[in-house]
Image 1 (cartoon, rainbow, N blue to C red):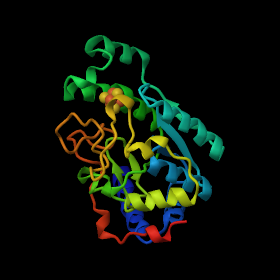
Image 2 (cartoon, rainbow, N blue to C red):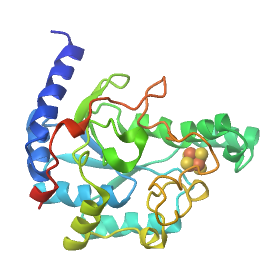
Image 3 (cartoon, helix red, strand yellow):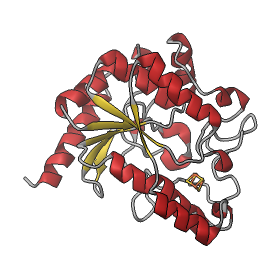
Length: 261
Ligand code: SF4
């Protein structure tokens, strides 16, 4: 069996098992299958804070990383520090390459991402994608806080899949959680969260590219709101053809929010 086929078989097995496990069980199963080289990329959003809490509580060897784009909200930087204090962890920040940022600003201007989708993708490429590559270099598995009901584009998020381009396992232990379950869990566990959530920022990214949403708006409507494409993503979770990595619907499996700690 090739390494790729082995990875796919491992992902399929874990994907099936996750369906019957609660969150601590999923993290334990993942750590057992991939004992080293697991990296969780957090943006300190609600889901990521709940997942951080669960990872620390489970005591599983998963490293924490974040992408410091240089354009984050002050509240996000404050939460980064509070997160490290609260759980006694270090979240390794990955910053963009200085020369690439200088070139980007020289070519497009400081807020050049507003000019066109191409310019926006260029900015996300420099400030997010390239640092993500370094955050995941040498990793065997990538853990994220993606949920299937965050947007139509994310409805196909699987529990566990393969990021073929990066050659690693991608695990989304919260794939079948609803936002209400996340909010409830965060409150019950007194998880530190971004104060911007209470001001209508349901999904929080870079400050100039995020706005609050009105009641009833989709939770990711405030991200790159000036673009018309409903499937707006920054590129972290899509392949070269713009498809979400990876397909496979968690709706095939019953939700297990009730079994969470
Ligand atoms: S979200 Fe906005 S500021 Fe952040 S990297 Fe993407 S385009 Fe640039």
